[in-house]
Length: 145
Image 1 (cartoon, rainbow, N blue to C red):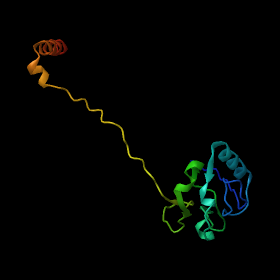
Image 2 (image 1 turned 135 degrees about the horizontal axis):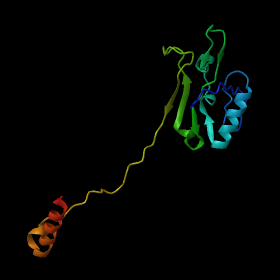
Image 3 (image 1 turned 90 degrees about the horizontal axis):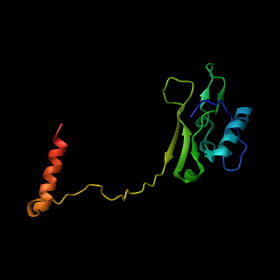
Image 4 (image 1 turned 30 degrees about the vertical axis):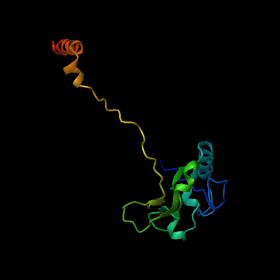
């Protein structure tokens, strides 16, 4: 999605930001919230209660500062599909960011499209002389260079 360096904090905002974020909101956090409101998107990893070690998504090189600046963003209409969102700080991914992982419940619709295979009645070529002649002429014309 992008690296916004946005901190949305712990103050709940409508149903966009939950009360389980980290730290204090910054200016970039305000802009991200405005963008989410415009696009009907929620920051779901702020909605789930987790211990602090499962909330931070970035740490400074000195390991003194830890912030929540990466988010699992989903459209509001799919809100109930996400069962859990948390980070995995123990994941060894050679980055100052840690993975944000979600557990989803998916309801997939069966594809009920009718078959588009065209079945030709080849038996009619044996029984109908006129159709057979038209078919032979058509094939010959298509094979000519």
